[in-house]
Amino acid sequence: MKNSNGRAEGKARGGHKIYIIDVTNRDGVQTARLGLSKLQKTMINLYLNQMGIYESEFGFPALEHEANYINANLELADLGLLSPIVLAGWTRAKAEDVHKAVQLTRVRHINLSISTSEIMTLGKFGGKMTREDVLKMMTEAVDAAREAGLEMITVNAEDASRTDERYDEDYLLRFAAAAKEHGAKRIRYCDTLGYDSTISIYDSVKRLAEAVQLPIEIHCHNDLGYAVANSVEGAMGAIDAGVDAYINTTVNGMGERAGNADLVSVILAVTKSRGLSDRKILDERINLKMAWKICNYVANAFGLPIPINQVGVGANAFAHESGIHADGVLKDHHNYELYGHEELGIGDVETRRTGRVITTGEYGGIKGLQYVYEQLGIELKDEHETLELVQYASAHNQMPLTPDELWLIATYPDQVRQIMTLAPPVKVAAARKRVAAGAS
Image (cartoon, rainbow, N blue to C red; front, side, top):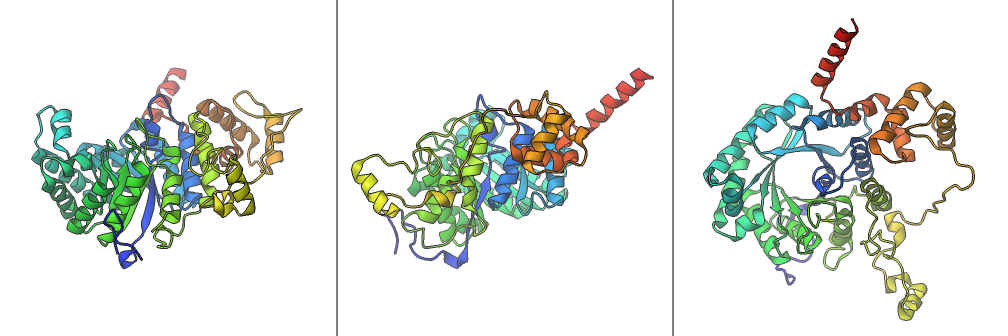
């Protein structure tokens, strides 16, 4: 039996699953006028891991100011804090970017991106590159990543939706086949401008997956308000073609222009919507009870309040005023709620201390630091080192530190110090030599 989109109803074919790859720390941080500190990006990786998210696209390993953050997070993975989440970097599909990424960082998983539509090939490269040149550049980048010993190579087809719809429908298939031949393990189908509809993305991804027989990532933008719906239907196209699907999300739907597919909305759509709720196809490790915590942390970090009507976590997500609705929900919340607020980790009473308050931060001292950590029940190994890091971290974030950030600082001081050092190691060493030479 098929639904109105043409996708098969019933159990997932071959037991294939949908996995979540969150790209808040790569695409979300590219939101115009907003940004995150490296420490905040690290906390997001920590919360994503606690939430059971399969992978975080955690940064740009070919950018020098990301190198220390990336390497420190990989150290935290080795220490077991950021595990089992996969930490993957993003670069342009250029061999030189791959070489720089492996020179600067210890990244083992990489996503290589290049535009595939004719309109972008002409518009971005100014007529200097043909679509055959694009294929060559991509395969050379994949070769470079494979020769560098990277474990997972994903190739991103930017603007795939307009590639498949216009000009040359077979080009996207040739692109994916060439990526696979050179060693790519996944293909990312990007609806870069939010151009697809649920029907078109299902058909395009299913055709692509059937042709290439590799897992497909779905990366959707929200320019037309379709990002979540398209992400789910695109994933179902991959599932129905007999491969695993990976949906790219961002926390609170952050991202360029109108944003990306919202993490919580995608999880709820896959687990609660008609025709999908009984299929059990979402990665079983996902812990939705982390939703409230991570969404509020990201909202505060970006300085952007959660909209009152945000799916699942908005202030009105479980609010009822209509007399009929209020009567119905008080009798049985299932009358007007598909899911309960407890499922998203909402319900814990949060209190804010009034009266005498002691905090610690950019201008704090030892006594205040000791008091705050005692209240948190955290034992300090080196009070003076912790105070220094707390002062730097507060200046780094430009906002008060959260209890979890204070815990991370006290527990992993070496990695936190590295995270907050923006100059790459080589330049830091050179600067220290200059200082030493001047002092002598």
